[in-house]
Length: 409
Image 1 (cartoon, rainbow, N blue to C red):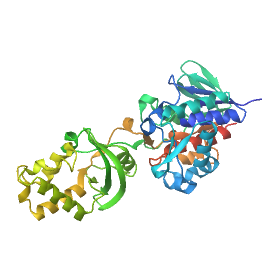
Image 2 (image 1 turned 45 degrees about the vertical axis):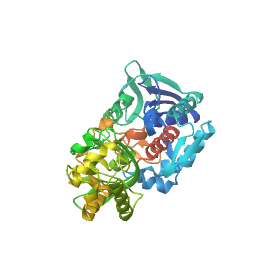
Image 3 (image 1 turned 60 degrees about the vertical axis):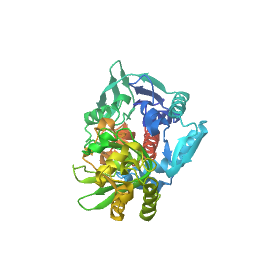
Image 4 (image 1 turned 90 degrees about the vertical axis):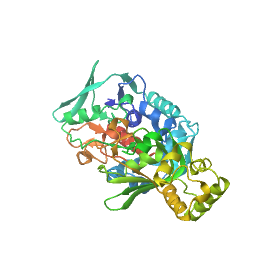
């Protein structure tokens, strides 16, 4: 007799869990409230989908600051190598980029979604467009799910509803509600991989400015320690700063207290202070009789010139040929460490990942089964595990989804 498995949520974890359970002989129903599967996968990696990180198991664990050790069984069962092999075997060519990030060669997230959808359907899974409202449990066992339009009975139920970030993709926290109904503890939910707010009005004036090939450091002002540094791309917005490096930085900030953290940007990381000073001398010599405010067009993007000049505190109309050595040195310092005070995270709805979720001590790490209700499994972002950016969070989804699907049969 084929076991009946109901999977709630057709994201990365849900589709992997449904396909795996069906491969192992179960009759699987995959419930998704959106008209289309994989909505959140579509927007990951700026629509390119960073589907995993091409690293070994230990490197993966090191990149999961929240409950990484809980994932040992899942990641050993289905590693990044397995993920790459899985997609390639299904006709999706992939490539590895900087930081070992793995993308589809087409650079299209839709190709990842289509591959997963095909996998699910080819495995014999039935996809149902409905919204799960209530977990049905009897005598300490999960026996089904009550949805808006119907009730689905099953031998096992796998909850893969995602977190609370990006609610437009369907991640509205439903999984936490279902977990609480089963008596599970849901830890405090916080945004991770999220833009950062700043009280600095310069950010607003530079709104829309994207900086490429700059260095970013996040400094904890209480201890004067650097908690994060990276090189790459970032963006100024009306509320503060965003972009790939900033999202990564946010997951290293555990308790955001206003005034505790500062971002320090090196606008010219390729130049030493001495080289930058020579470059400034050259620019000032070429514009010797002009106002200093007109000497930066080749050196800096237009939108950041005024904020730099304001911090420098040299009159805008001072002529280039009378700038002193000391003033040049001060300018080098500003360009090499342009500071932005930080005051908070953007709301959880704008985060890529939710930090927090179903408490890992209440889940069996070898199977992803609930320790409280038999036949109930969890996979993906609904669990209290989150990683740094670079494909690690999607790997959590693939690995926990695979293990939950296999264990549910």
